[in-house]
Length: 91
Image 1 (cartoon, rainbow, N blue to C red):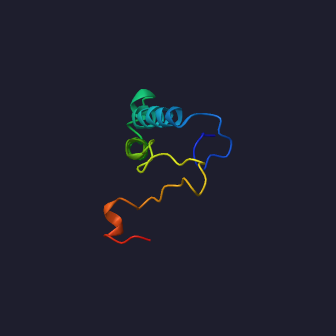
Image 2 (tube, rainbow, N blue to C red):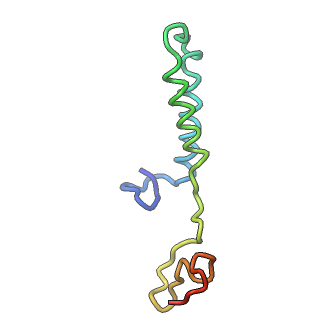
């Protein structure tokens, strides 16, 4: 449902999906107290809600090495050239 690298339907943006994750995590974590069933069970809702929030906080929406373009092989930028990962070797 998300317009992302592996999205199947691509119906919503990644930022919208991430905002929904935040809202769902908060709602799930607070739901035992909102709906007044915290006397019976609250820990699973709280744990899963917090995990969803942590996952949303760790999600990177900007590529680490810049966006991938369809510039073709002549203009393609090698992801490791010019970085410290090539250890001085050229290929």
